[in-house]
Length: 231
Image 1 (cartoon, rainbow, N blue to C red):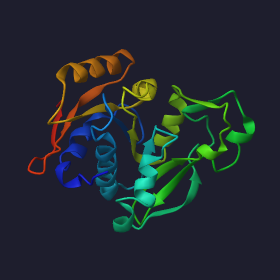
Image 2 (cartoon, rainbow, N blue to C red):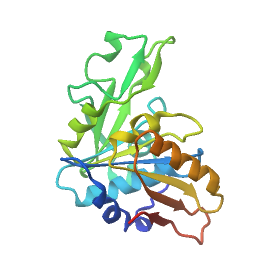
Image 3 (tube, rainbow, N blue to C red):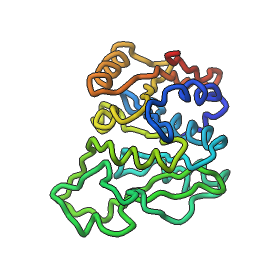
């Protein structure tokens, strides 16, 4: 995971105009294929808006089993610079979360530890963690539409930044696209396939999401990250 803050400086202002509901703004980053850099963009964007926020900024990882974002801030590339993560707080906020365990298991869902949020260093950023060790071998996880949950998060944050797994791996992002103010597609500048981007764009809109634009994530050492967002 890379720190792209220096290349994303104009993105917060562009997305700040997209809020449709009361409370904090929400944005989801998603790519058509794995390896496009959506997690790096999401984490870097969350740090940028967190530096200007008055309230908390939540960075939510929809790839629950892997906890890529939490690990990046706890022990990974962001940990040393920012001071790691703090103790857990319940991230369900006393409401039904955006995921379900099937078959239902009240024991697994109970208590604080299943889905938590952790403060990153001395910043206003909170990154989520899912404790997959609570799941049993027969358990399946399903991401579901849950507008009330996201509205509850809005009430306590300035921004909710969601990192969705690549569409080729999961439809999780599509399940919540309609509950976001905006969705940003991430693609590698040196290998972007316009047909894939267009196809993902159409899928997001078919599920009620609003695509703000595309971030082209440059991979070459002499290239920069360019944002192409709808104005």
